[in-house]
Amino acid sequence: MFEEKNLHTKIGNIELGERPIFLAPMEDVTDIGFRMLCKRFGAAMVYTEFVSAEALIRDIKSTVKKLTISDEERPVGIQIYGRDIDAMVEAAKIVEQAGPDLIDLNFGCPVKKVAGKGAGAGMLQNIPKMLEITQKVVDAVSLPVTAKTRLGWNHEQLIITTLAEQLQDCGIKALTIHGRTRSQMYTGEADWTLIGEVKHNPRIHIPIIGNGDIKSLDDADRAFDAFGVDAVMIGRATFGCPWIFSRNELTLDEKIDVLEEQLRINVERIDEYRGILHTRRHLAASPVFKGIPNFRETRIAMLRAEKKDDLLAILERCREQLR
Image (cartoon, rainbow, N blue to C red; front, side):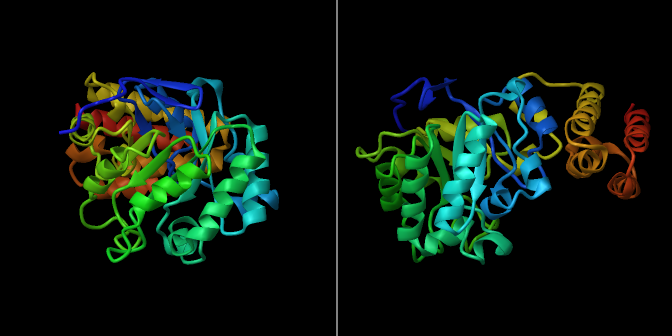
């Protein structure tokens, strides 16, 4: 068990309190409605869906919409990914104008359409380029720049201990480490021992945020106790469950109220089509509906709903079945 050195975590000038828990940036998941609810239930920091640098500089409408943030969700970070140095720098400048509290560099996404093209976790195969992107983005913007990555490309290349120092030397203000390699994707168990080693490297002075297999606040507490990280980030366990950040247990009725509110926020802040698209992903994954007999049919109906009122009606039927 590591001794905690810092009771309060700070990234740049952003005060995050004691043992802060973050919402991970996730494509098609961390929309504005979801972020606002996670913030309400206790998330210390939230992130937008990750943003393609190439799409942003081409002014692709759906990508630009991802930059929409609200003061109610602060502090909020916007995460960008890409493989081209100039595009990443230009995208960072555009993101800065959107007014987030920090800019995060995605060097950890393992999916083929990102990593396979050399972006995200693909950067783990080109460390000089990763460091050049980091340095140039840090130099180009006035906001704090942070990064998120993995332990290495595979188990033969567990480079995170050295890489953390190199990224710190480029000027990042915090580093998030997912305790898996790219080759693992999301399989197997996250290895937090290397995250702990990075945190307790005497040459590391920036906050280290641990990520991977955190499914509850109890898991987060154990990670703080065992590895001494400055913050813990929760990803997949948040799907359809923004109250995961709360120490207070909600009733089933209250949870359904929250999901309905998420739908309303997303339709209002994004648009009906994309707002529904985002929300129904959460609904289909939410643990709330596990008690409904033959939920598969209801789940299919949720995933097919195209109107807000239709989706609200399905939720109300679920409420009645759970009573």
